[in-house]
Image (cartoon, rainbow, N blue to C red; front, side, top):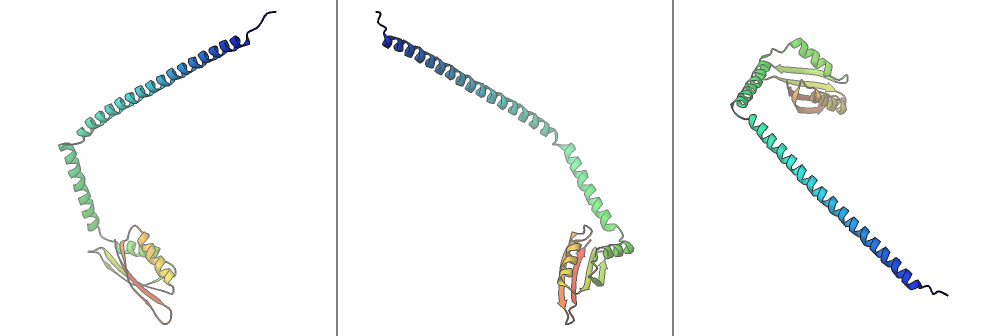
Length: 172
């Protein structure tokens, strides 16, 4: 009978599997090395692209400096100044002003007195109501209105009858 040497067969299969594992390790190493090199190349390419964009931006921004831009800026300032002067010179139409005042006065509030100073563009208002809530809502409504600016609250007084008198000033 023939003797089979099982030990030598298992040694040869071990050598083949260790060679296969070594080959797999070498392939993985080269794949990792290629990926790393590709990433380094891509980062370098992005850096160069960014540097070119930055240089272009710097060149373009230089064109926005100098005498022509300063003239535009000076013209813009003069235009704003003339608009402010025109606005302050506008005549306040009393009918429109009263309609505006009426439109933002709450139903629970009665305007007792108002004084308008057109030169200072200021209005002083005294009102009556029976609730502090209406007083606060009325003042808030004046503050939210784009026509009135700088609303400053004045005095509050509550009479024995429960009537609240309040006053405030605003510019327009």
